[in-house]
Image (tube, rainbow, N blue to C red):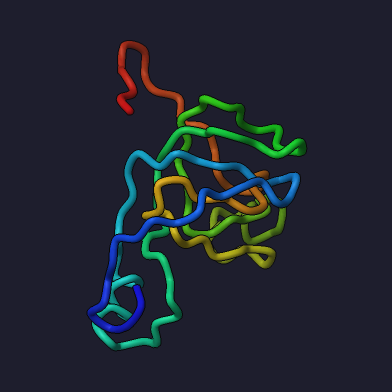
Length: 133
């Protein structure tokens, strides 16, 4: 999004692992929500952002310190990467984590997810269900 009302489909450079806790995800579904629409409608400032911050997809690449998922896992992302260790997270409010980092750009086909060890978790389908890509 470049300005209010100016949403574009653009080619972007493929992401790469930068931090040892990063992962590259091939997004299979993502959504745009009210917080994306506020800048689009001119209610908030636009910062040349890629829309979207809730997503599901398949892990394509992981950094050497990523231990909770492996390449090929189907994962569910959150709009906040949280540490899952602070008192707030342990109380069930990961979106308010004191170490939390906001995630965006999940409408991109292959976003880099920083600090992957924190929040993204594998999705385990029920027996007999199929994952389509």
